[in-house]
Image 1 (cartoon, one colour):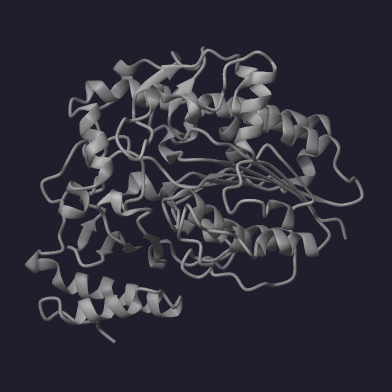
Image 2 (image 1 turned 120 degrees about the horizontal axis):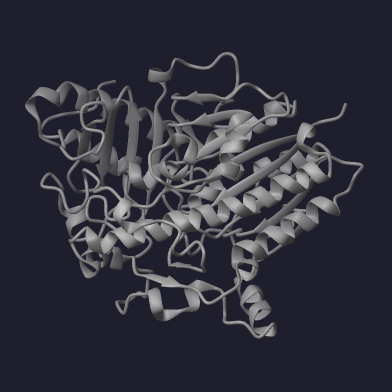
Length: 466
């Protein structure tokens, strides 16, 4: 039996409103749109954790970060990669180009070939050609002087040829792997970009591609009246305030962020052209997604790591060789669904996944599926706490460990401006959402289950419905 190939394209920190076919912003992505034309765009896709390592580990294992012990961006080390191992065990050649970020030195345990995952090697590659160090994280121009030194919303035009950017570097490795593949086996090719993760340092013409004047003011820009201490004292609130409360200071950041996305889209186009040249389009499943989103000043926050939609929603587009007519699905989806969906599309034997096949004919009704997310602070300097979140039936509930809860009616308040957790009229909904989250925490053996139940039973007399 001949199984289809898989091309998994992944970006870092990309909001779904940047996809051109969604028509939510001026950002243009004609090549990603082309993938969507032959498949399905999941317009309500979420990350299990809005942080690089935990999110990626969930995608590649089909498990939540608390299940695979991959909650830490610094110390997480992937020991089992269920999705890649499953494909490899069923005859696939596993090739990986670009960002790995699931443990130092372990990528070779799960792949047949890998390249482009070392940023130090990329920096040296640039210097060997007489170029500037293209690895933007090494440039202090767009980093805060606070400790730790994190990226800030400041923009910078990078003095680097487009074909020498890190995105080009990663793309070229992926292209070479496709062209030099083992032609006796189907391939599972990953192309994992580091952008559009900040710093927002990109070359022309992309740096000036979008006019900051075209950036509309979001309904939830800046600190919100209903917020609580977990946001108001966050390190990322400090970085927001450093950049300024005036949205005009942020418009350029949005515009360059969009330019970054369009630059990546052009490299996606190069990948598609190689598939055509190699006569592989009719035999390859293509997935485009990202690990998490970006706040860009929403709720007065920079970066990610919060349960607001700007942080936890991701693009997810799946195209199949069967050339299904273009669809836009509103069904809630999660990165943990990628593994079972791809395995079933490739007719692989059953495996134990936490997610579901998103393209199955037996999908759940759109409103009846809960999606979950979680986060553990990456250091005390963040001035935040652990949180767990559930979203279902148009409501979102977030528990912040030993701090205030959040409850949002997303149908009436899609910008998540009004916290209803203390509303007398929403206490029944609060109890219902807590009950769903309690079941999930128990099913996944969450390490905070004990603290969660202790706090819930003592929280204003509102317990957990059993």
